[in-house]
Image (cartoon, rainbow, N blue to C red; front, side, top):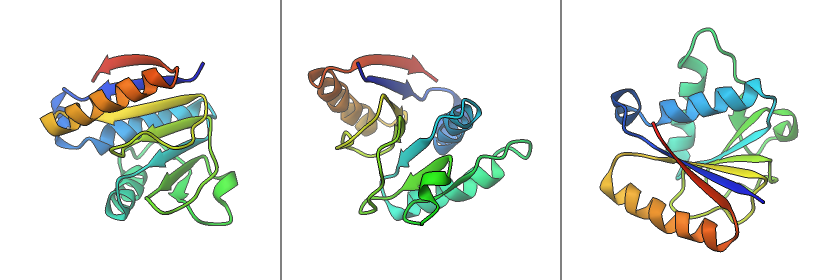
Length: 140
């Protein structure tokens, strides 16, 4: 059964910069040798995440790149803005307002403290349940 985990941001560290939580999740996935796909809302968010993954922790190296290159299959973490087709990976971090069309075993949803984002996450929660996912919530 596929699994969807919702990470609801509450801590000041993450509420000020939600992409830091995405970096933490990508670091954990990389350490577990789990190929990860990050679906961003737009190209600007993809570029911002790319830059942050290089700089957020000087002791961590997370092999990553923007999707759409011939090295995609060999890169641990792929960042995919809308319009870029990428193969499904076991772990997907979804930052978009809709559920992914294709997915592997696990989806992580990072939800900012903003009330509008929380409402969108409720819709995705119900959609994952409808699709037969095991759904969990974690307060961050």
